[in-house]
Image: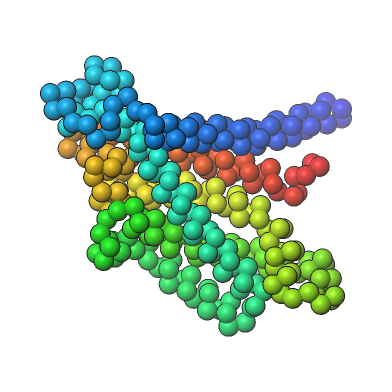
Length: 286
């Protein structure tokens, strides 16, 4: 019996450590990406937009660490600058969409009735329009650019956060401490701010970390279609689009930005999974 118990305990400890490693590994990746993005604001090996046609399509290490593109631009410099553009757009869009969606979800849980039903129908309408299609419609009026990408992603994020926040808020409203607060005469606004929000903020943070990975992927897709940042501002998605013509001649032009996008999405997903396990109340004291 003792060996069986020891084996089960060891398996449980190994499982918990693997969960914590998700958080550490994801955090390390994201911190490194943020460091690269911030560094690109003050230094890159060469100006990202500088063209040197004489050095075009040079492979890695032949000219620069990661070679050059079809215009002779330094690929490493473009990746660094693209890191800042991708992260800044994704973080801004998720922050705006997450804030508006969370406010809507918490308000719907407090008010209930027709407002909750109306919010859910609006969410259904927005979900029916993918962010790529929304960006195409916005681009027709606003033109491609940073604002169009941020708006398209943020609009899609609003119903995502609204539904998650509504579901968790409704659970909080059924708790004894909320019922006690209502019994002593606290208003719905006071209860939402003092009792509901503090108890669902961890779920919002976890969901935000996971949605950042989706936002990075969406921004890359928009740039790939020409709806993201306008040239010559570097973008991972547009680097992929430009590399299509040179896949056979210069495959690194597609591989490197593709790896950067995959790494960012992987890092945010790992971070979100780790935060979910860390902030899960069922894990406390386990």
